[in-house]
Image (cartoon, rainbow, N blue to C red; front, side):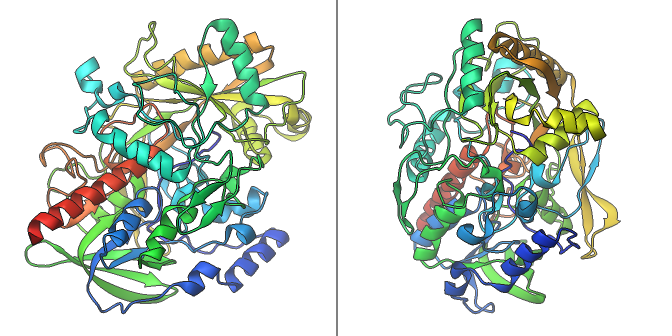
Length: 559
């Protein structure tokens, strides 16, 4: 997707920066002056009282396990860097006005292929990056987890697809994922998607036209957005998607299954104490090395929360950053290492008929026929998806990708409603040159800024070339003119990977830190490989599994 969803949840609260746009200034002022109903309703337990668990970050990694822990009767506190939004008031059909959903603190990009940050790899607020993800939720295929076994490169997961499948099904049914039944790729499933697919927008229909001519199978995609009203525990009846198309600006009617309208209400129902605007700086430990408390700032006041267990769910940048800041879990030498980013090249074309690329669910169509291409000269594979786009995002990409400016840009943007795109989401192998570290440069809080090193290696370059050729052929077959590509990488992944041994991994297969027995990590930093699908569904599935394994361990201990 254009600068698409990243399931990375906030740990640090973005600082207020001067806003030049008068309308945006007015909108943000209104948001700051009015507490949301959720914030008003939240009880606050004593910050001196020791709780069973603290969860840092409330996106795809933190929210599901928070709900599970609360349902089990544990006393849990959740610390989220960003505010608690009211979708009906805060999520405008306006890209620029919605920049508050992104992680706007500066992150330093380095390497031969510097990664775009900001909206591309961040999210803040109760719901994390799911507030602005596009809800594209395909499952990985079983061999996504066995790259080392199959190719002799990359890493195998310490989990099998069969171990994750029940959690994929649970998440799909709970969120109300809309998708095709049966699904054309992968093993047969015990249960189909909760709802039928969303309607295909124009870009998806054009992709079908071109792919059919080339013999490439396509299917309506799985999206965590409702194609029909759906009952949600803790919320009631959620309304169906209106095909507004501004999913990345926040869903105003709750049809998109972001964490704030799915798992968070369950957590609240069962007594979780959610503290928005809480920026974590320190993790305290005792003489035995166990976590005993976290220190955070909320609305300008510093607090300390004692806990028996800590769940760190800040994403592939903020999770390792917090570990490095606190010298925590570093024995393996892998914290911050093995950084990956999905290959995500886009190909755009202009059509004679009107397309209106802002309308409908952005990722309406999928093909996984390219999962293991027969003519591949690379490890792994990729999926193809149709893409919608918002106008400011598209203009920025045209400026960067085509070097357009002034009158040339204005002339091209007059064709915006006739433009359609295809995108890939592909594997990326871990490499020693790709990592995250703490820089010497300090942010406004006097903390080291994260520096993200990324250089696309030969495998990513070859995969991108293969995908570009395929997508250009699809658009040519569909009748597009003025075809051009925009190379990009999405979803920062890795940096605290799971494995079978603390010699080369940060956490075990259950998300438990090898070095710190009462510390768990639940986010995309634990992925040993990138997977050739969007990460959100797998992050949620792992979150539930981590919670279940933790609860099993606690029951055995208490028995």
